[in-house]
Image 1 (cartoon, rainbow, N blue to C red):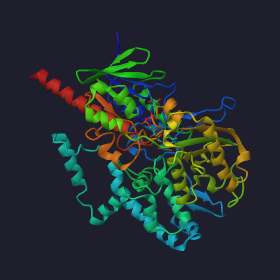
Image 2 (image 1 turned 120 degrees about the horizontal axis):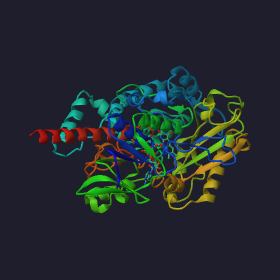
Image 3 (image 1 turned 180 degrees about the vertical axis):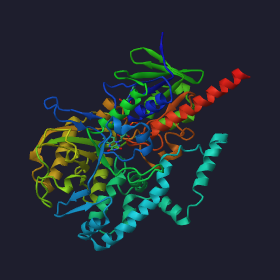
Image 4 (image 1 turned 135 degrees about the vertical axis):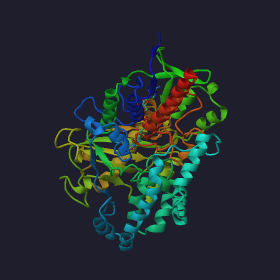
Length: 545
Ligand SMILES: Cc1cc2nc3c(=O)[nH]c(=O)nc-3n(C[C@H](O)[C@H](O)[C@H](O)COP(=O)(O)OP(=O)(O)OC[C@H]3O[C@@H](n4cnc5c(N)ncnc54)[C@H](O)[C@@H]3O)c2cc1C
């Protein structure tokens, strides 16, 4: 006899765990099925060096920012170990000498730091911050909005479209123009309109290209910057960027503890091979080992290609939907380099291996927009970047749980290698790429190379094979304009429902993903629970009638 639950969640990444927690909290008998030996997906803490298990790295994602207070509070995550240390400033040391620090919330120190490079830019900075804040006030609440199915005549969709229009009735011509610019411009063009110094523009451009198969001169990258800069999603202020104690795996563990606390079961080593569909309805899943598990609600949080093309199968899907998923863009060219260090980087511009403020935030290697653009152009021409860019962090500036005292962990989020490196391991080329990345830091911090005790290089192939990130895209799909809001993951199905009744979808490939924000999982659970209520009351009425 197949085991039976009220709800099955496929994938024990953080979104799957959030969905399970909400479903279980609402009283549904829920099971999470995770294919790997552990939960967390891309929010994971691991010990990649068998010879040095005392070092733990936050292997893929590395900083928190976008999780809304609603989820943190609903699931009481703080009581399960959710604890985030706010990050220090952006820091870039320049090969030609000098450095810049950019502070998220200290206008005076921003002025001092930026005016070393351009007085005009220092004076412009408060207006830029205010401009971004104004736009974030509009875009932030959209993150918690389930996108309406524009064009649909169903009453629920029409109501959603009207509600959205009504909410924005007060927008001024200027705000709409600014939002249009943000959605369509390249981050480089936008920054050129505001700033003059290459140092300031280089630092500000980084957020426009994180995880993106696009250099800073590509249209749409201005929006990516905004996605990473949003402060308030309408239910309270998001934290500044910060480091979770214990690495990102501890975020997943906190959510898992909450889910288990509400009664959810979590199974690892339980890869799903198929969603069972009968008469257009999901009725359960089959595992790779042949076991079947039944439930009338199934939530998938896997990459859309796996969730729909592999697990549901084209024959069960409308052809236009299947085509949308087949043409889903899912490139990144990201390589994650995790390092164990014997001491902190000693920057020529800010000397010393004692912990300094410049070690506590992003320790960047993106000295100018042209530098970053060149790295992208190399990859688009089919070769790994000769001089890759890096968004580096040293979480152990705060978090003492990841490594022995006196040592440090540094995490380098780097780009780009060619988009098709998900197809082959490219092991030796990745090692050479990592060498070049390390050399770049060594140029500005000459003790860097010698301080490396262990290193772990994770490229697109490993991300796809081991973590299910198809194409190596860090968000289960690019944050390009044609894949946002009502188009994420496909037009007509952006409300966390799918063409299969009873099957919901809550991965980072839906609106508000990617990132470790939990919103897709939360929304998918809400959609499932709302429909269950409808079904239950309709059944009740029928029975009563
Ligand atoms: C290198 C890198 C750096 C990043 N940095 C950041 C960052 O600093 N901050 C941030 O907010 N976001 C970051 N992200 C993005 C963020 O980590 C992801 O958007 C997010 O973790 C995805 O969560 P998810 O639950 O939607 O999917 P996933 O985490 O991908 O979870 C899906 C789960 O499904 C499992 N699975 C796959 N196939 C099957 C199957 N057949 N059966 C059962 N289970 C299966 C997988 O093992 C996985 O556990 C980064 C991502 C990467 C890769």
